[in-house]
Structures are given as structure tokens and as C-alpha cells.
Image 1 (tube, one colour):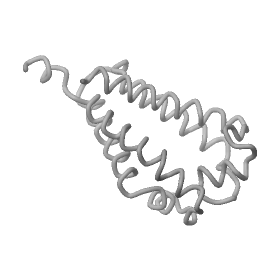
Image 2 (tube, one colour):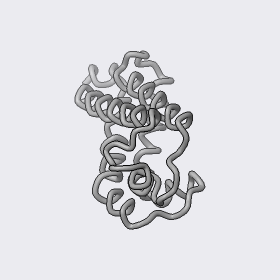
Image 3 (cartoon, rainbow, N blue to C red):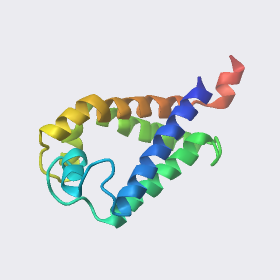
Length: 145
């Protein structure tokens, strides 16, 4: 179970990181233009965040992916960090995108964002949250069973 959770976590985080790299480079993909991308991802037809903060998210997601893979070790600190991040993702899934936007001090979302949030973002956050928790399982405890 732990190996599957690691695969799911790493795959999701690498995809999230790659998407943010694309956006940091200035591409609106998969949207047709930056206004539509902003509406889909930020919730309003406003400017997308600058390249710097977007790149920070890309690096952070890649770093968490490394941690989830076990490449940074399986000690107590990585396990606690994965559980904390898993909890954040589960909160994101349960509270929804408007709560996340409010936490980032962004205006409430439009219908496009709310629709994408219900269909894709919240389920992705829930799956990632659960997989991070499972990936954080103590390997020694699972071998004792």
C-alpha cells in the first residue's frame, strides 16, 4: 500500500510541478490565453501570479515529490512533513477552492473555477492528501505486521 501511495504522490506532485514550470515560463497551456487560465486557476479573469511565485510552487511540489518518493530518507522529519502536507491537501479538498483563494487573499471565484474545483481540483487534493499520509507510513511498522 505504501509503495502505491508513493507512486500516486510522486506522479501527482511531478505533474503539478511541471504544470507550474510551464506557467512560470509564460505559457497559458492548457488554456487558450492567460485570461482564461487565470479564470480557471486563480478564480477570476485577472493576471496570473508572477513567474517567481509560480516557480517557487513548482520547486516546492518537486521537493515534496522527492520526499514522498523516499529519496530524502524515511526518518521522522520527512514523515511528519508528508503528514502535514497531506493534511493541508485534505483541508483543501474538504473546504474547497474559495477557502484556498481566501487564504491567499484572492477574491472569490467565478463559475469556471468553481466547476473545475468540484470536478478536478478537490478530488485531486483529496487523492494527494490521502496518498501523502499513506506514503508517510513508518516502513518499520509495516514490516512488523
